[in-house]
Figure 1: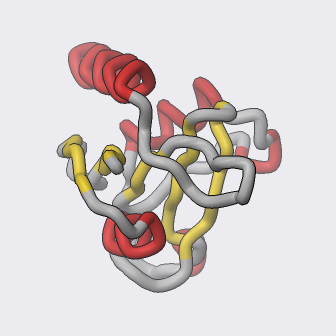
Figure 2: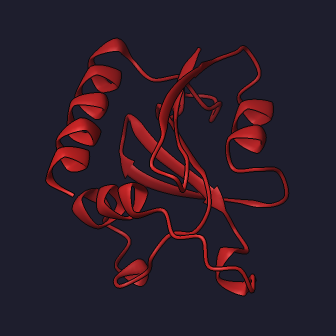
Length: 118
């Protein structure tokens, strides 16, 4: 299973593993995490408590992705904080999936373009 991490520093990486829960937990830095569905085959996971923390650690690359693709209007104007991880959708049992090769390639192209334009 492969997922993509976006660090607050802007660094993008691919992580591989077999346990989606542990991958997501590590990708957002532990603690509680929030699920935001971007597409049926693309989910963003972030620190659920980022708005409550005192330290300002914006993740602009993840925020651009969120604003461009999220249907969650409750998040309009929100700047994501800290590290995030992106996974595939879920299977028919509700289990989190890794990214497909097609989604992974498209995501990396989008993030590279966003970095160039920043």
